[in-house]
Length: 318
Ligand code: COA
Image 1 (cartoon, rainbow, N blue to C red):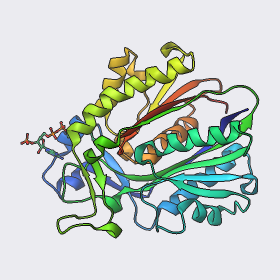
Image 2 (image 1 turned 120 degrees about the vertical axis):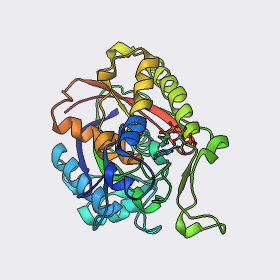
Image 3 (image 1 turned 90 degrees about the vertical axis):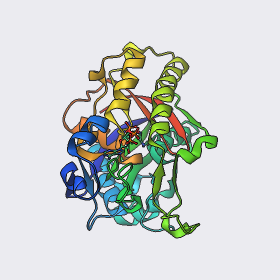
Image 4 (image 1 turned 180 degrees about the vertical axis):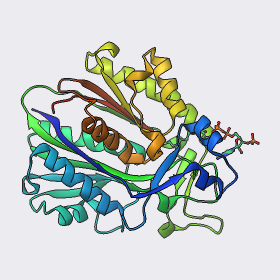
């Protein structure tokens, strides 16, 4: 048994914040941000929440899959910015969409959250425990952003993406996840609720250069590793769906692999880095705009706080 993606959905806030607006808040410019990151704008919550966006993305994914909410057996929401600490976001989504038979929990793996949920869902399905699983990445990173720090506030955005996995015959692919807690200081967020010191704002703090160097080294490595593990070649991959943090990181990954960057779709120019939501938002967009065709083989790769990184492969079945 293996889990196949049979529906996707996404939801982003209505409010658009472009680089010009940011340039009025901190010392930066549209040109600098585009050149260093590729980002032109991002969406920021106003009345939306992590749960409301997650629920909307989930409803779309279920409709796309033709599956009723009552059939869902497990909901995993990957998030670092849930509305409240308790109950978990997955339980709140369950209430919103009426998936009354589902077990629910959240995953905190930052930008690797969706990949972690995908790997976990595959393990449950292979073990025969659940057959129908809803996985979501949803973030309101604007709540955790220091809008006075030009090194981080230009990067992030809010949004949610979801996918439905259903058990199917045959053998699937194995995903790979790695973490190096020893380098965790490179990207941290103590959270307002756990304010630990006088100068601790509770916002995200990042050593941008270190994270950049980590990503351009580790992502190509783990892509090769997951390909080898699954006896698959680079040429067999139709699309590389990489965490949407920075255009230069993605271009560097493509270069290091010797692969055409055209195989690396991007939407970071519109949404910025939405952490655990970036991969499922991109999947849902590619599904919606007809880029992904049944039978396409995709490779998903993520990296971020932890530091953590990983990759997984899927044959597109819808
Ligand atoms: N606007 C204008 N100048 C800025 C700026 C901004 N928003 N942010 C930093 N700078 C300045 C710095 O102060 C520095 O000035 P100095 O040379 O006078 O000291 C200069 O630009 C270069 O800074 P540096 O940090 O070396 O820039 P960079 O090329 O590494 O780009 C990032 C910074 C954050 C865009 C880049 O490091 C990055 O994208 N890293 C990865 C971050 C990431 O993806 N994190 C999430 C992972 S999930």
